[in-house]
Length: 583
Image (cartoon, rainbow, N blue to C red):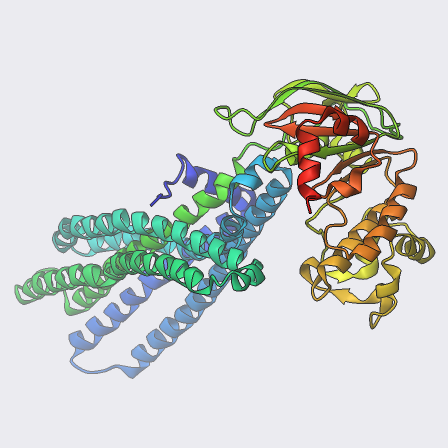
């Protein structure tokens, strides 16, 4: 299986996002320093209290009570500083994740269609939602514990050296053991957390695919196959997750074992120093034992942080991969805004392929006059849909040029180019919202009267007015409970309302009953008047009146002419036509 490897400088790139909040980071560091300072100072107060008790042989409450009050007050201040630090760290963390998510979503809108065609939508969704959440958790733990951990280690070591350098050296000598454990865990957790991110994305993609096509799965009886496929991915996710959790979970037990060794070493050497009557008192020994705990505790936390940061960086690298993808080639600085296209088009020696090693369209030439109806037919995979993608500039040609009104479409802004087209495809494009919102998508300023007129022209008004709320009826994603034919009628209504200059129809009436199709075809004939139209057809009965019919195979135009001319030619088009009308 494929493994995620964090790109070089992932941490540096993450720090680049954090740098926007450098002021809050500085405040957080100051608060962390204050918290650590108070945490380290409080044991000294208790040490003095213990020495005063032992020295006098009795408890002096007048002296002890003020000490306890001072320790309690400092503990309260320490708690307040910790709360403020955590609040600021939360704000930094989720602000950074929000920025990354916003950047990723903006990036998706600029990615070329080639990226979206070659990546599963579920994987992309997983990166922006799940991976960003995992990254947030790791980053939050890093901010909360990493700063205080480092400061605590340095502070306790300095104080221990000032109290008794010999015992401090014992602690320092055992430090490499904790570091070795932390490094060992971090090395292994990154690998398995990386694999976990990949498999989780694969699982999300499968769930998205199955739930989005559940009718197809049930229609072909593929429920068992889909369960087997999901079960296999789920099993891999379980194994990878168990390995990742295992290595991250051994962090605390292993470091705590080292901590116990350090504590025992300090207790033994400190007790020996007290008994020998040296400079180490019982109060100092109490401080040293407290510092031994505080010194080793950050190693536990930093080891845990290291494991979480490995997971966070693995997830961050997947989100950053999207940010670093090449965006769609931007419009030229002097790109033309296509105001009122006449529909005259020239396709000049166009060549295109999705991959360099697999040729598709080569030497494609076509001249289209304004108002002509051009039909495109041919076997599956001949290049019909690819040609439409090139007209819309979803892909740019590899060679040659496509011109509208004498202007290369690469010299026209994409927005003005695409606003000049009206498309009705087999696949319906409907969004969650009202019927009205879906119809007026291409013309937001349209009035209800104009919408109703377009609906009547497309024969969709008869079912719209029967809906509970008419134009205000809410529909779900991709049309919700509407039939396929009703959804397609809405798409046709949308195009009729927009009244574009160039039409692209890809089996636009394939989901409509025969009686309605006849009426819609009449409406289309009205709509197509004085407009350039490209009709991709499988049912040849719908294109008999076309001005020109192109028969394509393997990206080439093999035959061209009217229906009558091609039937007289008695070539491949004629054979295709007869195959549809054999008795």
